Amino acid sequence: MSFFLDRIGPMKFMLSIMVFVFVLNDGWAGERESDKQKRISPEVASIDQLDWLTGDWEGPIGGGVLEESWLPPKADTVAAVVRLTKDGVTEFVELIKIQKVGKTLELRLNLFDASLKPMAEKPQVLKLSEISEKSVTFLSASEGSHRRLSYELVKEDHFAIRIITKDGEKIAIDLKRP
Image 1: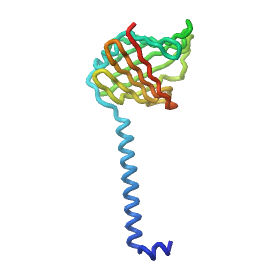
Image 2: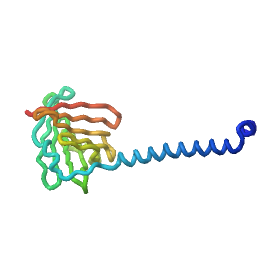
Image 3: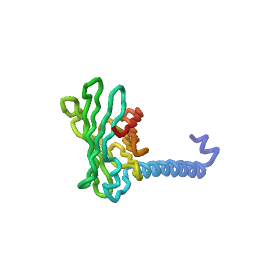
Image 4: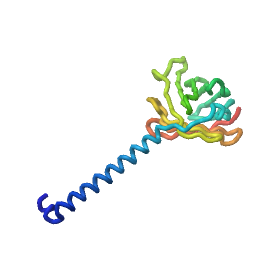
């Protein structure tokens, strides 16, 4: 260390340390700001912005058929019942509720097995991340199977669901009106 100090001098050494700390701290501050922005959900005017979800949808997934029935917006909520059937057997039923909470949206979902036993102790909570005229994306805010969940009305008869699981698996589901 003394060889190093003799070579560059104590002032340059201190200046180098200060620059290093400043750059490191600036990087952490930027990371903290980025994390904060991820937690802030976009504001929505009304739950009616999700009226495009309304209706019945179905399509193939993993050798089975996924069906979703979305109720129209009412009382600051939109709700859906989802059913996956395969080989004549109901694999699961899922309940989804999107609710206006303050100025943003929160999605809660819970899966039930064929006997309607909950597959998780509590519903998973996801917070609004992005919203546009015909699409909405939520990010996980609690433990559960979904890290990211998005819905998009691609065309009047094409409904797309995109999921990133907690393990990072990407799932694309394309549904049509029955």
